[in-house]
Amino acid sequence: MYMSARTIGGGAAVATLLATSAFAERVIVEPGHEVQSALDRATEGDVVVLARGTHRGPVQVGTNVTLEGESGAVLEGSGKGSVVTISAPGAVVRGLTIRGSGRDLAALDAGVFVKKSATGAVVEGNRLEGNLYGIYLHGAENSIARGNVIIGIEEGRLNEAGNGVSVWSAPGARVEDNDMRFGRDGIFVIASKRNVFRGNHFRDLRFAVHYMYTDDSEVVDNVSTGNTVGFAIMFSHRLRVRGNVSDGDLNHGFLFNFANSSDITGNTVKGRMRPAIHWVTRGFRANKADARAHGLPAADAAASTENSPWRNAPEKCVFIYNANKNKFRDNWFEGCDIGVHFTAGSEGNEITGNAFVQNRNQVKYVGTRYLDWSKDGRGNFWSDNPAFDLNGNGIADTAYRPNDIIDKVLWTAPQAKVLVNSPAMQIIRWAQAQFPALLPGGVIDSRPLMAPAAAPLSDGSARLQ
Image (cartoon, rainbow, N blue to C red):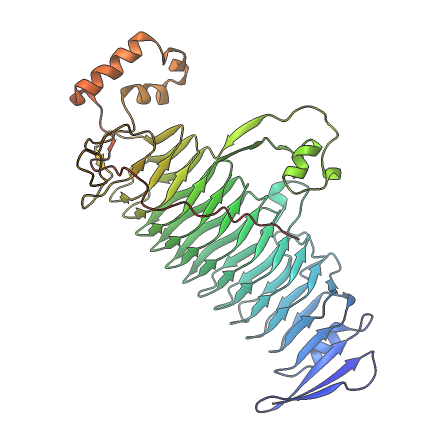
């Protein structure tokens, strides 16, 4: 392919480059000239390059071409509809700053909207600022969103904001190595299959990953920092959830609701002390010190001189609700109010090799059955387990029970906490320790580990520039 370069608005042809088999052009569009006209005239394989400066959208990419930007190239929409709409298979959009989408949720207005016909389309290396949706992969099989910085809507009602990347019914789509901040959810996927979500970083969102009805897929090596919920995995089967980090998410690190037959391995949830954030509509309101701590300019903070209260996050490292036949192995759950909340008939799960470290309550199990969280002579590590290992095999000499009758009383009648240190409560707990038959049904780890099986992953906190 011979590729010649010419400039629209800047004079004559610039260069001729040898490639592989047919003739194609590299067309450079200067600011002030019609981007859509250049795209309409482009033929398959052409590269339309936007020169440094601001260019006007919206634009439609209806041919298998590459639309890319030089350093400093901005494509700005009109405030209505999507800024870039891709309908051609294999088309590429890269290297642009894209902003100015509409705000119509029903119309799915986005910085880049990839239609079902655009199979294999690639959106990479862009910076998407203040759009309703950052990137929407709407049925585009094998499409890719890779290496983008996506900064969503920062103010207003949360339910009126869109997501960083939305995936709807796009089998084989991949969302990789993106940085996402603000808006509603980082990645929202529904009714899809065979997808890969890898290496993404999320901050200042409701859910980092909001995952529904998407089977046979991977959620791997992502980092969620300071969101309301890290990874919400729901109504999906046969997933590979590995190597993800939830660092200081507020309510849940992981939530599994009817997620079945999945491999959940090597993930880390770490709660940490941080200042409470006071949300006013969508933007947060805190003092200037809090703003700096969250990487925001002091101008974004209220002038309040009151000290912000501090609290621990998250509430639950992992919430397992009606999730069955999963393998939870070698995960690290640290610093939460509840390490694992396990309820609603979840059955057939293998929970081994995990580390439960300094959680206020290691387990909250709502049920009456006996569940042994060990397999093949290997259980989990519990930081509050006072057991001995006299034969030095790395397994505690006695079983570990995270809950007792008193815990169950406190779950059903929280007001009873005022009596927790009373002599009567202490006698009941002593009696249970001496006579295990008094203990209710619940979780038991018959082969608890004396040391964690693996170290926690680094928090890897994203720092968007």
